[in-house]
Length: 192
Image 1 (tube, helix red, strand yellow):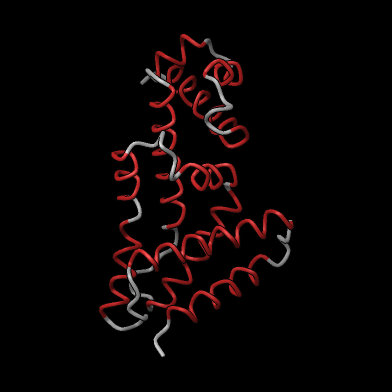
Image 2 (tube, rainbow, N blue to C red; image 1 turned 180 degrees about the vertical axis):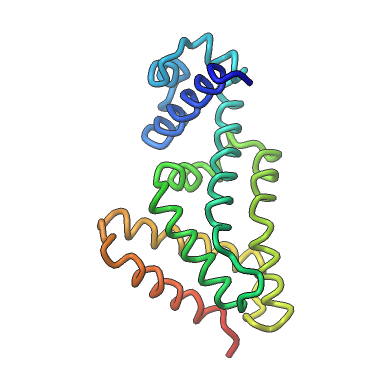
């Protein structure tokens, strides 16, 4: 892919991310995305045959980038609690440092525009979390709740902490907020 093609595609994706997050899918036309990206609507359709294809491509790309972000610094030899703490911290930090992407995924993960195939492919990016939690269940390092419940509580709790930090601008004590949030989560997970 040439640099010019990559640049136009990136400009389209960046514009779509910004506009979908601000206006939603219905409030964002392809013409508006093209204008924001500085390309013609025809050019947009050269890269993405439909608006739905653009949405799905963007969703998969954003989920992949966030997955790479949350994997940072995970040490397989660390204790289960320390791995969960690092994963938690990474989720919060990635959300705070990439608020548009974090909001996009949160807003649109259940959207009918996101195809089942795209959702399944994006979920594979996070299989390492399921594996870690499953190991915690098997080794009795965590309470044996259902995987779906554990993943939902982890994800929604991390979203709440990210929103707290972003909405209050409390960046000066972010490490304390992250640790306090982890302690609340961990008390629900740790065996008696």
